Length: 215
Image (cartoon, rainbow, N blue to C red; front, top):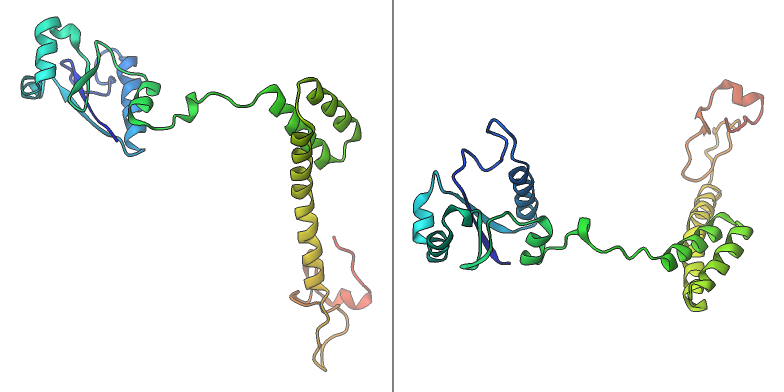
């Protein structure tokens, strides 16, 4: 990952909130720097008021100041070369320089075709026949292939079937026959893996009067 050096003009601090008026450009850039550092970026900042020798010792920065004066600041140096002068970079520019994915500015892939495939899957999941017919027709108008629609249907059905299979597996585990002790109380049905209790609370003497309802 590239190393970035930021040469700020003379500031009391780099956050932009310590003066009389808030400098929104500084506030935004400080947040962007923290964002980039949180993703492993190496970013150093130098303040002209507090670290003047850093400006003198850097040939690229010294040359920019000699040509343009303080109008050159802020100055962004990447791997020893000036990348930007006179303003702070945007988060998108930082992400591009550093090779960091910026999800907030990533182009959307949610096209009209994708939306119809999602809707077809939702129709399968909700057992909505009119919905499926409508979105099938819309997808066809948009040029969505039958193969892609089939993939959407198959995936939706798999998602739909998963909780049903899990419930069946749970029922089978609960209903496996178990050997009850000789002195077991017959008031409550004993099932594998389940405590002697009703659905919504522990079994009581009222259970002896008959099978309780779930809730």
